[in-house]
Image 1 (cartoon, rainbow, N blue to C red):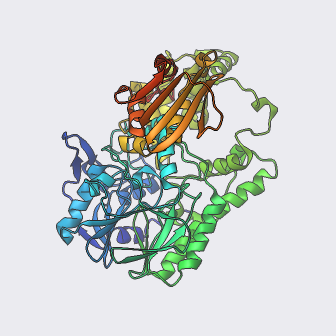
Image 2 (image 1 turned 90 degrees about the horizontal axis):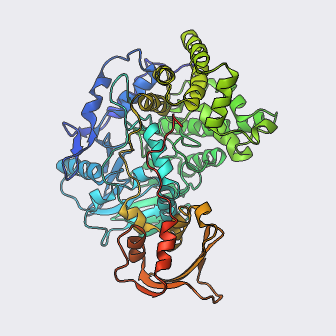
Image 3 (image 1 turned 60 degrees about the vertical axis):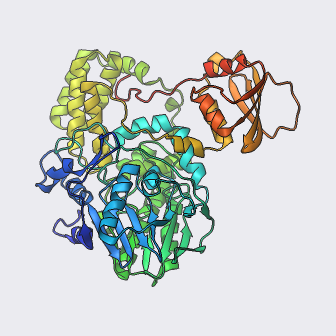
Length: 602
């Protein structure tokens, strides 16, 4: 049951409370580089072309609506200045900023637009709803001089997850994020439409100011600049550290990113820990029960608000049912012996959810979410012994191509499937042809055309971006991602243990097999004692070691000096005893991550 295209409620809600907009909505950094440009999306004002799914075109039009909006008296949102929203709550003497976008430039521009209309109110509080970069990265734009006495509230575990996600697997996530958000795609009917969750991601300078107030439990009440806030903890749902909260005096409920106007991801294609759909649904049910009767409007960190108690309850209930249904039916079907792929291909949605615009798969998808739930419970293995020890892509591709009669025959068969409209299998055949012989330009072009057609037909924005970016790369080669998530602020927020963890992840094991090294690290700021031992290719860290060993080298330093050491800025000011050349042994064993590794080619 498809949604009703004549229903314009979402457009009415998106425009409701309009105050002002930035015209043109083009934002630059200090060097004049454009980091945000909504003018590029003016094409969305037109009718849907045959290169876009009509439902995704509609969602992209909604995401392109931008400006400053009044949610309710004393609460405003800046929308369309980044993939996320920045919400501003007026207090006794200033304003509390919720989720200051990704980049300091877009956050500063949004704050300036607010002040142009509401006066030069100082920032007297900041709230990070959760640990993803689009909800804290622009904090330097609203607090350019640091926080001083400004409280910064965040859920328990925020800092650990915010920095570890961007460092441990950061390079690989960032590379895949360039596909997911279509960073390299031209904006237009044949290219980038949106990201579903918002129009796109800004490409300015991200930062991080650590929180000063930790929210630890549901029911916790805090008052910031006279604004009362009641918190509801939701760890392990959309993010490892996240929270909803109510402004009781404004009768307004913030749902963070736990309820947005699309189906969300249980496992984001850029990579992350698998989320718990069952827990997610329970938190939504808790929010319905906990805050019932206490709000007249619900808003979130993405998209537009929902007004009216009954409408909010319907919206949150359907969002709850969406994740519960995905979870329960996947488990029911896997317990009959079906694999993740089989379940995803045979998964009907309830008509009421399928017809609800906010439950459509513009960002998450039924197919990926079902496979993610399967992975959470069963892992990557489908139970078939032939899947235990498969060849890697290049080796498998050469064998498949040989079995099918060679490159020319694979291209011929793929072209037939392409013409017959079986684009999925055409892509599968051509993938093997390209991996078997990456110099086969005819196969690469046909695969690019196949990806293009798949992208044009996709309702899911990030599927479209993946397909079209794959086509772009097959034709033009790899372009490094324009966004760098590992800023100095993020590195500075790492704990000492996390810094050494990040070093351990870069040790080239085979080259380190026959090397040994014991280093004692005495830190004066913060005070700490850590021993690192290189053993059998693994870098082991021992915090506050009790045993005594003879170190090869002992260093006395600060955390900032450690960061300077590992980023190649030298050892100035570090007190070193023992053999300093041992440090060169360690640094020589560290691999640098590749920010532009191939994805659609070997």
